Length: 81
Picture 1 (cartoon, helix red, strand yellow):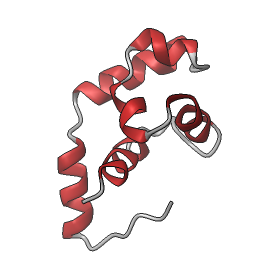
Picture 2 (cartoon, rainbow, N blue to C red):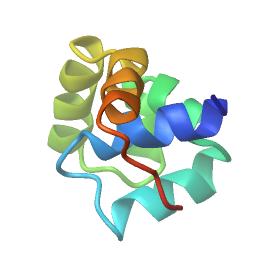
Picture 3 (cartoon, one colour):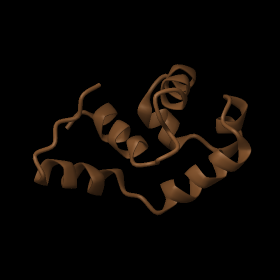
């Protein structure tokens, strides 16, 4: 499994990261894994609203990228980027 796809799938599981926010964050951080692992203040500094950044941190703490990836594989879902 390619690491970037794993973290893209995980980022896609957060409903507030859509076609505007996600590309902006990816451009700021350079990779999906870097966005996933970013601390709260870095997310805010890179344009995410404070409440959205805090919600993402809570979501991230309860979410396993590996489990999301396993579920996608189990359901034979292909990720398009």
